[in-house]
Image (tube, rainbow, N blue to C red; front, side, top):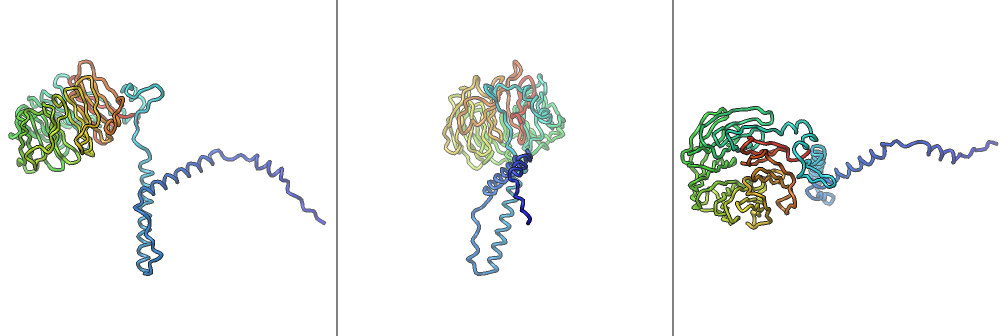
Length: 412
């Protein structure tokens, strides 16, 4: 008679305990589970509602067509979710302070040491102390920069490669500059008239109907060049046909500030009595007239969505306005009157005053308590204008001593 040997449970338990589990198995399962959950959330984001019920449909052909269409929609939703998960894995980087640190105390030298080489090469200075102060403008693609000195020096450069495209000296006072559609043509508001140049530096047109212009804006979707200056007359001219579209008398005297709303192409003009007027070529009078400051308007900026307008006045105040209600949301105070404002595509606010440049984060919807970044110019230099480069992590500053200062506005 053969006895059945009973299994040794103690040895089995011991052997199972002795076998070590792979260290990466739990973490890999956890990562897979997290990615699956993230993909599920993204799928819910792209869904356009619940699936159509097809069981109660008696027509087989219609039922099959609806099932096929639902299958195509689900495949499209899954593909969009996967594309967003893999092509946009992270948000844009920002400066992060630890402990008692503050981001506005970080110096540009410290930031350049921590970022990658490609981004570090975007920070540079151009020293042109004799022909300034300089204005700086970027093309809509952000690839080219237009430099305009008060003493008549004009230049186009492909700033990412530090390549000079063209350079000329008009030997005349230049108050403002503007690219047209791209780097092929640009306009310069000189002492008496506005001149159009091509990228080779050749004069193409002289717009004699624009007299003593102090500020210009080009409307790319309407092919219109708008100017205003000492006479206080706002002029619209079609750059494709050369015809004069509209000529509006503001009746408020000299005007040095002109900015467009990127959302609807309405022009905002800042006057010396503290009033901001909004204009359209189809209306003979101002669309809106707002008393914004108790003194001359120094700068205006409007965000890309057209919701907020920021104004700076001689009274050392920087105010944020709701364009939909024309009411102030909150205001900030500067040590000196701000002379230039700009809002980036990620809603960062740049303020230039005296020899300082401040960048404010989340300062439009709510009032910020401290600036996000702070930059000091060389001693004796004064800011002329600040502008963000589109689609890039760079803020350009034109001032009196050094031509432009371009530096990253975030760390990563």
